[in-house]
Amino acid sequence: MSLQIIKVLEFWAEGEITNFVKVWALVFASLSYCFFAAKHVLPGVSRFLAILPVVILNLILPLNLHTMHLGGSSAFFLAWLANFKLLLFAFGKGPLSDPSVSLPRFAALACLPIKSAGSPPASSVADEKLVQLKKTDKSSESKTVSRKGSEKKIPIESPVAFNASKKGLKSMWNYVTKGLLICLFLKLYDYTDMVHPKLTWVLYSFHIYFGLEIILAIFGGLAKAVVGIELEPQFDEPYLSASLQEFWGRRWNIMVTRILRPTVYEPVLYFSTVIMGRKWAPLPAVMGSFLVSALMHELIFFYLGRNKPSGEITLFFMLHGCVLAIEVAIKKAVNGRWGLPRLIAAPLTVGFVMVTAFWLFFPEFLRCNSLSRAIDEYAAMGAFVKDVGEALTLGTFHNVSVV
Image (cartoon, rainbow, N blue to C red; front, side, top):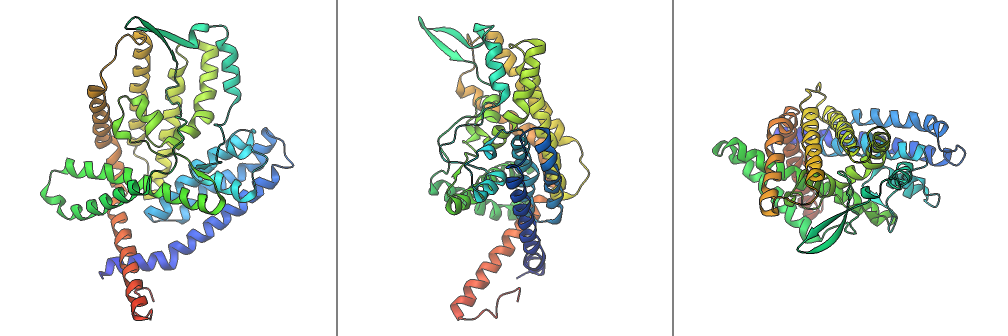
């Protein structure tokens, strides 16, 4: 076993795992405070002020973790997912506002990509107000498109609409296949000096996608096993997207879309509707959602590398927001009369995502040395598991590296 792997493994065993346990113990304690405080503080500004210290604490706690897997996932769950759900909870919205939820379920729902089985998507005040605004303009509720002599009503979709799919966990073989592909990628990285750098970046992109899906499925599966809560859909084969609207709204990291919709998109949409009318109101709502997403990604990358933000991540998301807004505007202008075939639109969409990611997203990802750190962590844990297996076979633990 190499010295570097031993050092990584000792760091995990002696420091990171201990800090991880302490961080999540504090998280559970702070969420318990929110759970019981809400029984005495009504939704609104008072509850917001009551839980604001917890929101700040969730921004500080990830600084105590340094590994890609424990630190990166904890930063996402706490600084983004938990904080946005707590902000909704402060005003009586979101999944945490269900009065029948027990404390363990409250904590799991707050931090993990899960939802109560059978629970409908959270409604919002913006939804109700928009319905009232729509009554004054019946044409905004549906569009009638003539196709081959027949008429078909097509409801307007939000550019960041959440696809209320009933799918949660995919088949076990799906995850096993993606896990084996990650193992293959790790082996192929030994030969990166023999292939074009761009091909290596393609492997990185699939590695990131498969890794995120597996990590989120593991956390969601554990929560389902412990407290009986269903996994929230995470990804829906994003490489099949035929538009940016489909990619960001219904296929990529769906739980982020689900949390951005009530916290950012709907409030901006409502005020934009009042100012500029229903037809063009989605455009500033889309840009607002992408701006918040960009800032949160900058924060997550800061947790990962502790580097000063370069602004490339923000540029990446704002570029996609602008192009998606143009896409929405074009769809409204053509009114369903014309569109690219999926066979052409899908490669164009995925190609645009990949090219812009190579240009703006991956450089930031590589700047925090993410790949080599992740590989070291994989190797360290693999070596540890191997040593434990050998020790168990021999009936003793004296060969385990960290002892």
